[in-house]
Length: 72
Ligand SMILES: [Zn+2]
Image (cartoon, rainbow, N blue to C red; front, side, top):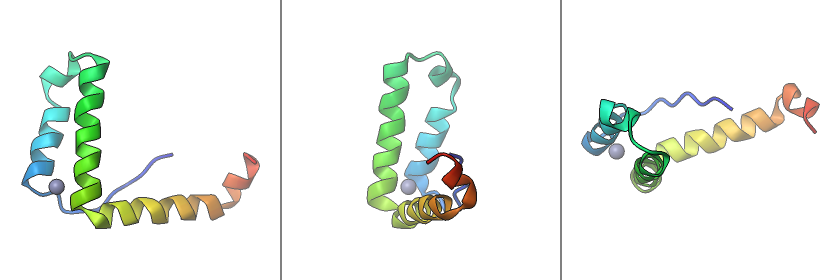
């Protein structure tokens, strides 16, 4: 499932996104990458309700779509 999120990242978001796409991260092990990603997701959950809502709406829309029925 692909999600396109439209929201305004705050300073912390930008820092974490920068961290996630840094060269350092490219060479980091899975555990480190998972740690940073989950920190970012947690931040989104607590600080950006609009993102969580957008994800939920998207999930609902995809469940309703005809393509989804093919995978029942
Ligand atoms: Zn943020």
